Length: 69
Image: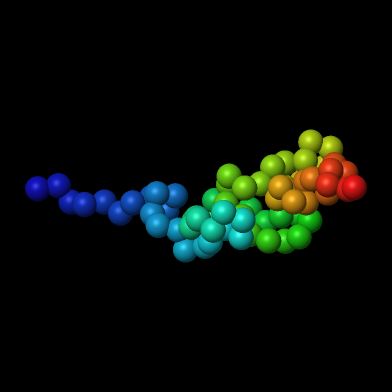
Protein backbone atom coordinates (compact mmCIF):
# COMPACT_ATOMS: atom_id res chain seq x y z
CA UNK A 1 0.00 0.00 0.00
CA UNK A 2 1.28 3.47 -0.87
CA UNK A 3 2.31 5.79 1.92
CA UNK A 4 0.28 9.02 1.92
CA UNK A 5 2.39 12.08 1.24
CA UNK A 6 1.93 15.43 2.86
CA UNK A 7 0.42 18.09 0.65
CA UNK A 8 2.65 20.91 -0.59
CA UNK A 9 2.22 24.10 1.43
CA UNK A 10 0.59 25.96 -1.46
CA UNK A 11 -2.17 23.34 -1.67
CA UNK A 12 -2.78 23.04 2.05
CA UNK A 13 -5.42 25.15 3.74
CA UNK A 14 -4.28 28.70 4.30
CA UNK A 15 -3.66 30.15 7.73
CA UNK A 16 -3.84 33.82 6.68
CA UNK A 17 -6.93 35.74 5.60
CA UNK A 18 -6.90 38.33 2.83
CA UNK A 19 -7.88 41.80 4.06
CA UNK A 20 -9.73 42.44 0.79
CA UNK A 21 -11.55 39.28 -0.37
CA UNK A 22 -11.35 37.51 3.03
CA UNK A 23 -10.34 34.20 1.44
CA UNK A 24 -7.71 32.11 3.22
CA UNK A 25 -4.24 31.93 1.71
CA UNK A 26 -0.91 30.41 2.64
CA UNK A 27 1.48 32.94 4.18
CA UNK A 28 4.25 32.19 1.66
CA UNK A 29 2.00 33.04 -1.31
CA UNK A 30 0.64 36.34 0.02
CA UNK A 31 1.87 39.88 -0.42
CA UNK A 32 1.79 43.05 1.63
CA UNK A 33 0.68 46.26 0.00
CA UNK A 34 3.57 48.72 -0.27
CA UNK A 35 1.15 51.61 0.31
CA UNK A 36 -0.97 50.55 3.29
CA UNK A 37 0.89 47.41 4.50
CA UNK A 38 -2.27 45.27 4.56
CA UNK A 39 -1.88 41.58 3.77
CA UNK A 40 -3.49 40.29 0.60
CA UNK A 41 -3.67 37.08 -1.37
CA UNK A 42 -2.07 36.70 -4.76
CA UNK A 43 -5.27 37.70 -6.54
CA UNK A 44 -5.90 41.01 -4.77
CA UNK A 45 -2.78 43.00 -5.63
CA UNK A 46 -1.27 44.50 -8.74
CA UNK A 47 2.25 45.62 -9.48
CA UNK A 48 2.60 49.31 -10.26
CA UNK A 49 4.44 49.47 -13.58
CA UNK A 50 6.14 52.75 -12.73
CA UNK A 51 7.53 51.82 -9.31
CA UNK A 52 7.45 48.01 -9.38
CA UNK A 53 5.70 47.93 -5.99
CA UNK A 54 2.91 45.50 -5.12
CA UNK A 55 -0.19 47.57 -4.32
CA UNK A 56 -3.75 46.75 -3.38
CA UNK A 57 -6.52 48.02 -5.66
CA UNK A 58 -7.23 51.00 -3.38
CA UNK A 59 -3.62 52.19 -3.21
CA UNK A 60 -3.10 51.56 -6.93
CA UNK A 61 -6.11 53.73 -7.79
CA UNK A 62 -4.77 56.43 -5.46
CA UNK A 63 -1.32 56.24 -7.06
CA UNK A 64 -2.85 56.61 -10.52
CA UNK A 65 -4.93 59.59 -9.39
CA UNK A 66 -8.23 57.79 -9.83
CA UNK A 67 -11.07 58.39 -7.45
CA UNK A 68 -10.31 62.06 -6.99
CA UNK A 69 -13.36 64.13 -7.64
